[in-house]
Image 1 (cartoon, rainbow, N blue to C red):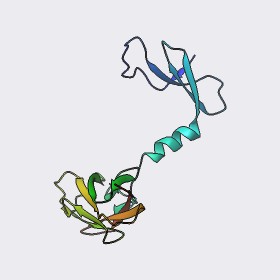
Image 2 (cartoon, rainbow, N blue to C red):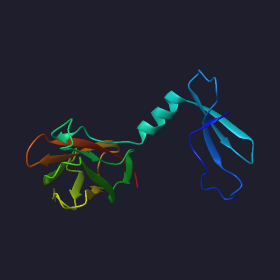
Image 3 (cartoon, rainbow, N blue to C red):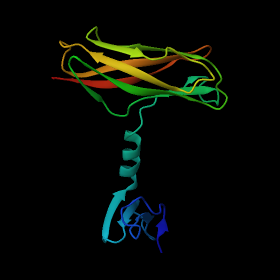
Amino acid sequence: MKHVFGGAAALPDPARRLLLYLPPGNDAGQIFIEHTGNDMRYGLSLAALVAALAVGCNKSPEGGTPGTNSAFTISGPSTSTTIKQDNSESVKVTLNRGKDFKQNVKLAVAGPSDKVKAELNKTSVTAADPGEVVLKISVAKDAPLGEQILKVTGTPEGGTATEIPVKIVVAAP
């Protein structure tokens, strides 16, 4: 008997599906992925699965009133954004509110140098606004190559501010 965690996935052939399961008597902490129709099976340790899921998350510590429903976080890109010299890119930054967090939040961004400019499309998110903000990052033609880190800070009307790093990689054109 298989303990199934997942069901059918969107595959081209409806007769095929993906199953995630934990075989009975499996004390090794492995989750197996089976693709029916092609007898493909893969074992994945639970620790590797948790690590893979955590990589996709770039979220700030809680601001506002941490540890309560009156807190908020800021989330952004989970990986570095590559921007060529003399170009710009936009990324999304999201304000995530606890169910009781009803404050306006002022947003600010700081860049690592005058060769990397960053601008938010909104510098204040009201309690009634959706939390998504666009961060436009412009890189000068003589910006140093390599990783740069910007910081987006959210400051509520009352309580604790929080910030998130947004990583970029400056590349040659």
